[in-house]
Image: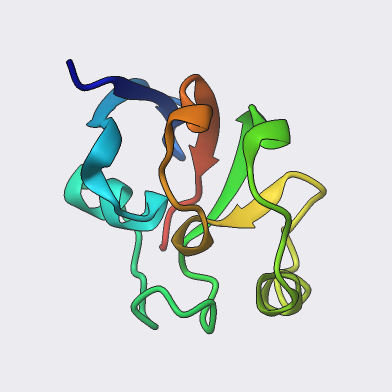
Length: 108
């Protein structure tokens, strides 16, 4: 039986929704957020070149892969980036992320 990855997402207005993603889907978090109709521009298509998929990790950051140099460089350009900031395009979904809680930022 296929496992489900549960990710809790807080939108810019404070609304909270839980996403259920099949384990073997082989997508990035950015792709899942866009498919779930969150306001993620993803201008660069997931290449860590635009930072329009900036998220804040609220819980579960210990289960994420370390930041790459490209991701760090992009986050350094954002005035609102903090210690828990990540680019959703650089997070590949896997079972270790079950229970991840994030906040998405609007692209207004």
